[in-house]
Image (tube, rainbow, N blue to C red; front, side, top):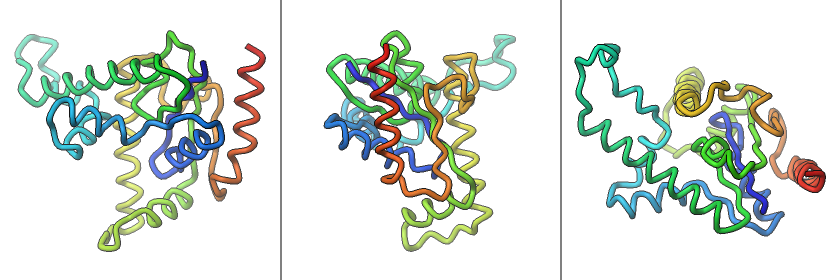
Length: 204
């Protein structure tokens, strides 16, 4: 069984890479579909679920929790419920056949299945270009504000991963392959990445 997971910096093109790899391999890529499926199951708004899904639950706990001064509130409980549903769904998807899963610490959640894990990164200029290309026409963020947004999202992703593993998000030793997409079109990189994956899997 071929299970591939993709972790990525915001704006690096990881989502596009997952879709193009899936098309080339003839398998399904799961990204926003996971959010949609959880939203339907939990009867919640998709945007709300998306905002909660990569936030660390620890963000809802003040420092006094260790002293027993804090009780879980509704927001924290619901975030935990969304996280549990997400983990359950990711495991179910992976158990059903070959697929690519983008984000959501899927490589950690599926560790027992030994997925092929990829980390995608890019320089700031490339991130800005990709974010601008995808942005709504009425978005008015400056380059500095947009990079700050990218950084904030990446920090949340790092915190989410830290909850489940001692390794740092983006640390090369935590993945089978790290891909720098700076200044490159994703479609140009797919053949080489696909060959690498196939060679790796065939040697196992």
